[in-house]
Image (tube, rainbow, N blue to C red; front, top):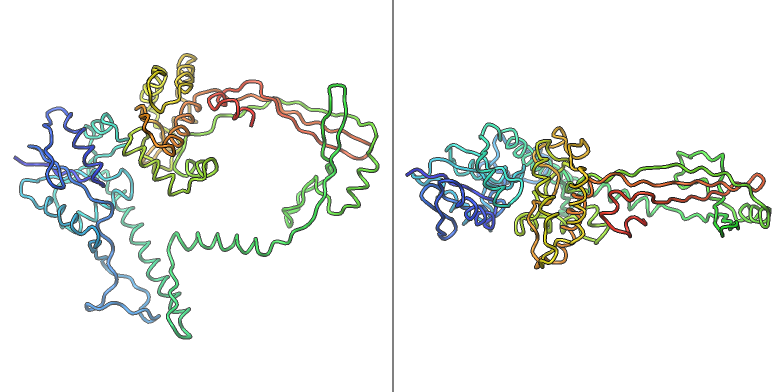
Amino acid sequence: MPKTLIIAEKPSVAADLARALAKAPGMKSFTKEKDWYENETHVISSAVGHLLELGMPMVDGKKVGWGFTSLPIMPEQFELNPIEQSADRYKLLTKLLKRKDVDSVINACDAGREGELIFRYIMDASGCKKPVQRLWMQSMTQGSILDAYKHLRTNEQMLPLADAAKCRSESDWLVGINGTRALTALNSRHGGFRLTPVGRVQTPTLSVLAQRERDIAAFVPRTYFEAIALFEVKAGQYSGRWIDEGFKKDENDEHKKAERLWDQGTAQAIADRCKGKQGVIEQITKPTRQAPPLLYDLTSLQREASNRFGFSARRTLQIAQALYEKFKVLTYPRTDSRHLPEDYLGTVTDTLKTFASHDSRKQDALPHELGTHAATALDKNWVRLNKRIFDSSKVSDHFAIIPTGQIPPKELPEAEQKLFDMVARRFVAVFFPAAEFEVTTRITRIGKDAFQSNGKVLKEPGWLGVYGKKAAEE
């Protein structure tokens, strides 16, 4: 009987697929072989990340030299070589692809450009021309896997992503190898070998860091002064900071501000002429609203996790990947979208219902108050189509990072708990109304001098209530 080979990106994902697809209609359970799973109709195996890399340039079987005369290096065809550490896995997949009973292949690598590249390089290097389909999973829950299997994408649908993946890989290679060899040759022209690595991403990033270091080194500290007054009224005391009402921003000096005075004598003169004098108050109070923040994409998640917990960008991605693959409580994390598809309202509602109906007596990692807030959003009919949340035009390969609806276990490690809590609270909070404040600007005048005081009072917490008292106070 003909069989279909399913190739995942990692062994853990292959195991998840074997468990989930065994529940698909008409599918039999899988038997575990050495490095693959098999039943009467399917074989499931996996890569271990990247198995192949673009080969180094060769001319007549010899390596290209490092001198300027060898540049530019522009191969007509890029060669793929197995990565030494994972060569055995590549041999296994090649063997499975060439099995006579395997007549089609399903790409189940991570649903993104990098996963597409891993799979396409395997197919290209092995020379396999068998029909291909794509298993495109947004999360690793059983329901999501079965739904993706039910709606397999065609090879033609995936060709633009495959081309983009190869283009990125080859452009990285071209920039890296030509730039590195050119600058190495330049820096070694007076003798020695001064390796100077260049990369499409690393070099611009290094340039930004170097420019910041130069700015810091060139910075000259300047002493400035502020005049702060303490005013007494019947209700108590308040402070005000002197400001120059005629101040205009100086494009050539970002450090100049309306409240800064650059000599102590001027600041002291203000203090002397205002001390003990009566002021006249002018006050404007305006209502203002603060809309809930957008859902997370990977970049915003990494930025906030760094600010709140000190996680590096890599650490945040590792944690999010574990919450996606191992614990199956978050959707695919490598996304640049902060919106959801417009047909996702039903799924979102189901997830909120799961949170709202959760038994708080159970020992797990879902905060009890989050279920209460989810129930509030549903009861008040706040969960509806809204372009700030549901906008298919702003979703490409993947939508925003949200909970899958599975309740995280109590064994969730501390770092994973923190990140899940961030995503889950944001997911609930986006459906709440804006927070409402009263913002007051008070100008207290003493003669020609003006002192500014600012105040902000929370009137309706709205979405801030999901984050608790501390967030509302901030």
